[in-house]
Image (cartoon, rainbow, N blue to C red):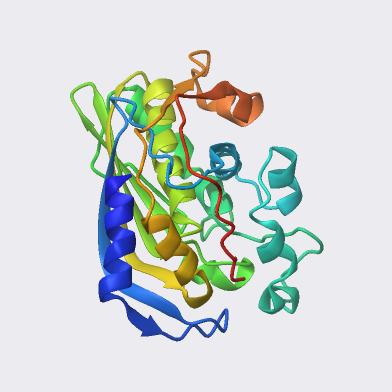
Length: 282
């Protein structure tokens, strides 16, 4: 919580205004931010200076891990974050590769589970990582990436959090996640929750203890229409971090693909200030 607030204050104090051609709304921006989350000690990084909705973030992560390519699939598991990008982004609506309503194209989990190879076959990056880690193998390339420049035109949005590297030291698993662009007031807490849960799940299904998740952001920004609300949030004193319990019956990638829901993730001791409704720029 403190590191989140420190980043917000840094943007307010040191940020530079940058025009944003995609949204038409300028951003107050800083370059390079590093956060870390103690997954092993269950310090769940959910915001307490405003109410935050963690289940939608977990639902989105499950959709990525399953390789979903439709906003309808995400809605079905409790996540509405892809509705606008799939159906209101004019550039995507005009794209001849769009298949129709709710289609997201080849973004995020599609790349992670079905990366297109030159011979026409596909590569399942996630399955390879789970297989290696389950055998205690870390080849220093246990990397899950959604960033495929050759197929940007085939999807509604370039990935923001684009690459996850897993590192095994003894029986402890670590995660380093890279994000090219971050809407700090609105999107960052989603991303924090997903880093934490991704490491916790991968450790659990591969038979390891979870260490820390390291989160690196290249471009961290606040949209102009969010700034005054963020200053209000910065005036609030944070509460202690809550804890998260994950169903111990989740034991394999197949479990994640088939029956796991957000009900398998239970939050404890969550104290929070009132919600703040930040505007979203498509």
